[in-house]
Image (cartoon, rainbow, N blue to C red; front, top):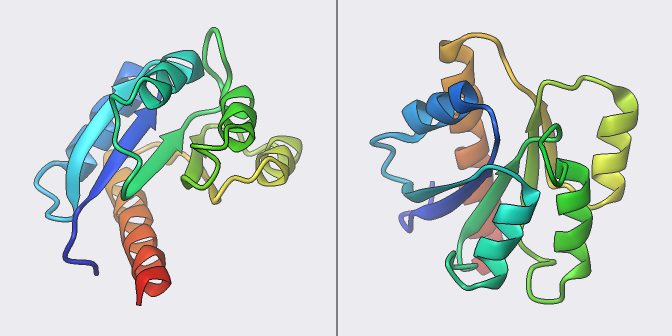
Length: 141
């Protein structure tokens, strides 16, 4: 795994899921910061306003959110010249194949269905961190 920590922007409106991600990343040496946005609109404001560094950033976004859904957010990110290369991973309760296909069509780096229990949630977030660090490292070697 990379020795340089990553930043995560979690785009999530469910407080329990936010807590689960916070617990899963707490104390992880490969996570420098975890920022939270409650929907896609707030996340875009953070990204476009320069409040979140794009260097070594991984965005983890839910699909079902108020104001701006995860799919709308993903489309906006991919259409923005400054943001289009930032990896966005979908983390959602939707196992719907149409949602999955649309997320990948819009350029999602991954699509994961949220597990119900905290233990598997921690394992999933750990796998996301490991995958991102490994693939980011391969690009820079």
